[in-house]
Image (cartoon, rainbow, N blue to C red; front, top):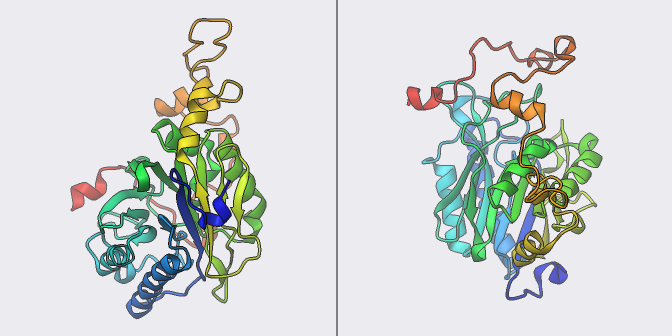
Length: 338
């Protein structure tokens, strides 16, 4: 159903391209500018590669690489030159784009942020990663929730980043807020390959939602990212999959948000996103609408605690060379410091 990767575009189709971008090394402002231009050039390649493409998606870490460097000199701001260049590239190529930046935070560690920019150069979605990949990543936990926007051709579009996708609650929240297509960008390396694949498929199937997923690709001399661009249909079947690990390859597919909407309305069996809140509707009118899950109620009340909580060994980033933090989390810190 992918229209030969989008070559044969249907009237209701949205053509997605996920870029298995070569993993860079970015340690100074000159390299940051060079990598910005490289991404701009890849936007042009995406447009030339597939004239029907509606949205081109770049992986997490496509601008900064995997060094985990928090040097303020190479952190980005929404009004900075890197984001301005991405906006202009979308205008010049008449295409929507999804980009990754490490965002300067005046009150603490930087945020790992995702941006979606439309073909007129307008920032439409702005997301900060809720679940940094601990203990490896030093990023501040996100404080903007999970936004869902109206994307190209009127599709409902959401975004999460990398480790976020290992929490089924993240994809469920995207779907609950109306997303028909969920983007998952990542910098994962080869050991995560199998879990990457089956979580992408389960995120789609459990929520009747298309997912578009992509990692960085190739080696920076230290790390090896795996590519593994995957576009998965709402029934969990893989529409397109970059399995050869070729850097800079753009994996494409046409997806059908109208069929997502149709399934969510008409499916009975396995309409899980609806049935979660309407348990046993065959037996009781409209189903049970209580919350039988203690982890949900405990988390909402600030009482989340595992039975084995006291035995967990890794609870900060010291094993990966980061100092143990002393500051407690306050989602308003950055706004108060600005």
